[in-house]
Length: 514
Image (cartoon, rainbow, N blue to C red; front, top):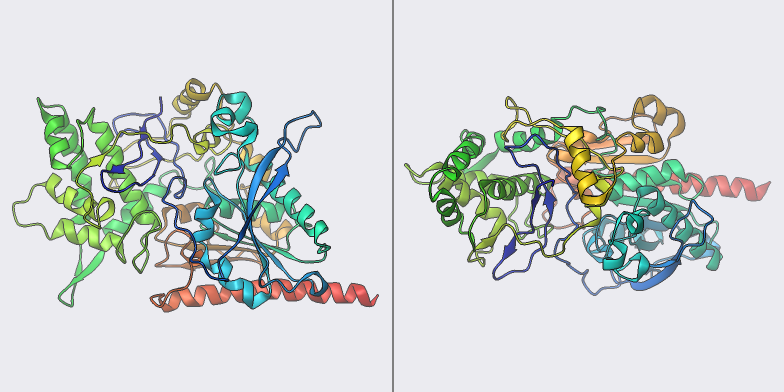
């Protein structure tokens, strides 16, 4: 089967994290999820700005068939406290729910909540079908039973959910004239961009943050993702006693560690030695599990390399990659490679110091919906090359990928379906001709930025790119520690969104005068 990094479990902390990884020694291909699927839930503070009412909408299971199908309760979060109402055509801000519990995304999308009072907007966070509490067939066990029950877990069905939900809600509130602005980060950002393109009559604009809409087929170089992760560690700079250092060994130490792990793992009692070195709670079944545990940490560190302390995936310090490299480089002379690596990775897995040991092979939640999506339509091919990457060399192998999906789910992936459904090839001319009112925002520290739109396509399809930004940092709530470039990025987004809404009102007024 496709090798999966289990959810690391701290003995004294509960934390849920999944990443499906290829073992470095294999030529199979991996299915990589976005962060957030099993992360700890941080509920918003109890203020009028971020409180919400939880509601359920009886959603159609199959929007593209007229066969009788059971409906399912789709959860959505709604806040109308700041809404200026239908008579004033108050805008509606809709966040396109991703692959996880919608409360978690609501808690980590403070920018949307902060904009609501400024625009007199209603805020809605609908949950993606088959995630959280929005389960068809009555339960996750039934919904995830087999390929037949999972068949309706697709991006197309999810977008139709959002379109049907918002249309019904607007009708019930007599708010048909209220403009809708879409928001989304990561997979949710992809959904926001695609929904704007597919349903332009439903939403007038979309902010698609860290949305790798081009990470399909061969539109971008397959090595892009891991090269960006590697470069984040290669160019790492940190300070000690006000003296700035450029790390020269962090990247090299990580790159060397894979062979050291592999060599030691083949020796008598080598796995026991590795388990002891990395403070694992139990025995290590193979060095491959350790590979994946480390690779997961490095990838997520690149995604959440935020300029201030955060708990998006883990409790982490500001600029966590700098702290990891500092820990690796500051080890005493003579410290071996693996001890340096453990000291560095502990910044990610144990920054609070509360973990006594780690589990790398315990699967708490079983099969996840993203596994299915990656085995059907969300096929994002990736590779790692020995020259630019700090990871072991491996190549994407579609044949192996498809075989593993067939074994796991009984389905064969459709690697070209997403580009057929939503586009991607020749995206510049297509978006310029047919797209409008989309912001693609990205930070270049984020490895997913390599699969996104990084240059302006037209006056209304705009790319906002920050050199030091990480995974949809702009969607997070404002803090006193926000750097100037982040403040400026959000200001640009607000200006563009205001322009969309103003243009909409101007058009509506012109129609009314006629």
